[in-house]
Structure formats: structure tokens, C-alpha cells
Image (tube, rainbow, N blue to C red; front, side):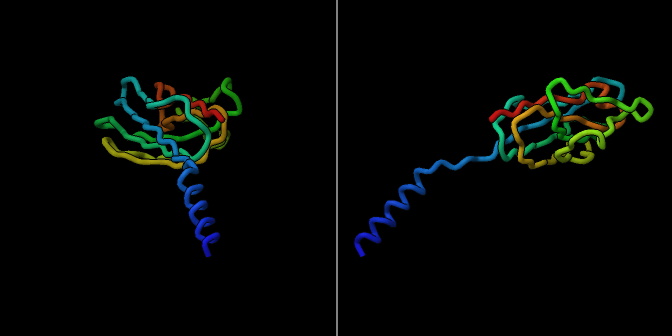
Length: 141
């Protein structure tokens, strides 16, 4: 019986001493009004691979915004805009998910498991990407 108690105590110590890996949280703030500059800012541009939660806030007072997470083939990958539609063709990209249209002042979130590589976060509402609503994210091992 005593050896069982010792084994149980040893197991408890191992469980307590084993580190747990918390998910990374990236805060995203979107801003900009029609006719003016559009912004999409991240509180960190480099994170470690793994479970990631994006907390997205639309800081605009009149414009809806969205956030699309795209895995790039390389950091140099160019993203083409369909000039007739004023939007990026999401079907030609590797989307990891999105926070759909957020009303002014609204919040949303996206959870994704990210592998090492380069990502871009963008707003794909007509004209917003071209007006500057995008940011790069680097994910390391």
C-alpha cells in the first residue's frame, strides 16, 4: 500500500511540475471611415506556433469591418485585388477563418491553430484592403 501512495505522490508532483501551454492571444484593432485611411493593427506581429485567439475590435464609428486570416505561401507572396470588385479574391488564398462584418464598436474573435510561417490579416470589405487595412503576422516554432 505504501508503494502505491508513493507512486501516487510522485505522479502528483509530475503533474504539478509539467508546464501547460496557454493559447496565444492577439489583439486586433480595426479603424477607418469611408474616404479616409483604413487601419488594421496588431498588438504583436510575431508569435509562437500553436492555438491562437484573435480578439478583434472595430474602432470605427460609422464603418463595418471584417478580419480575414490568410496563410501565405511565403513572406513575399503578393495578394492580387480584383479592381472591378475592389476586393481580394479569397478563393485564391488559404483562408484560416474570419470574423465577419463587425458593426462600429463591435467585438469578435477567431480561434485558429497556426503553424510556423507568414500570415496576413485583412479586411476584405470593398476598397478597405487597398486603403491599407492589412497587417502581417509571423509565426515561429
